[in-house]
Length: 194
Image 1 (cartoon, rainbow, N blue to C red):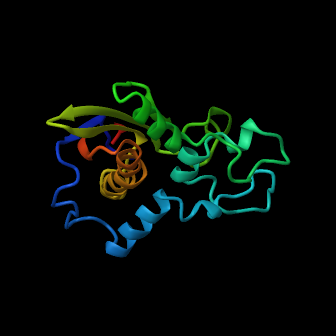
Image 2: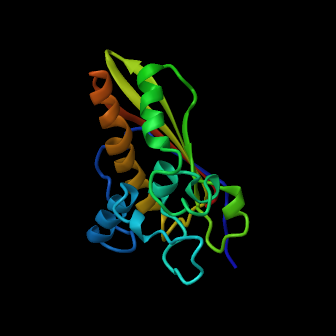
């Protein structure tokens, strides 16, 4: 049995201290590993879906964001090869650089053909970005939606990791692409089942 609720948390300044909560399971090394995983360091752990003997992970969040649709969008000979899906991360940065006013800069992880019957489908569902300008600086706001978010065992690491992902994978490349200063704006976190 469990107790849950629908949770909506807004963090006005996600890049300021204290970013690390005293009461989280694990240690600093676990946070570091999770950030590296979100940046793609463990995408090679994703299994080949055509090989029933392959027992590696079904996905990583990074693989779903940077190579979405790899398994079902292409033929069997291409499944499991990097670069055969949609790179949503690059697409979002390009969209925001071209149209800073857009409301269409989002990434998703859910793949119905795989996830409706998966043993462990992704909890992270989407990341939505919106740029606002304040005194010449672009502020990158982010809405995160989780299907399920373990309040004690995962939420803190998810928030820490996705804040770092947003900085390194979206804000920094956007700043480089536009030549304008891009700061992290507010983070809105919604968990359907928290």
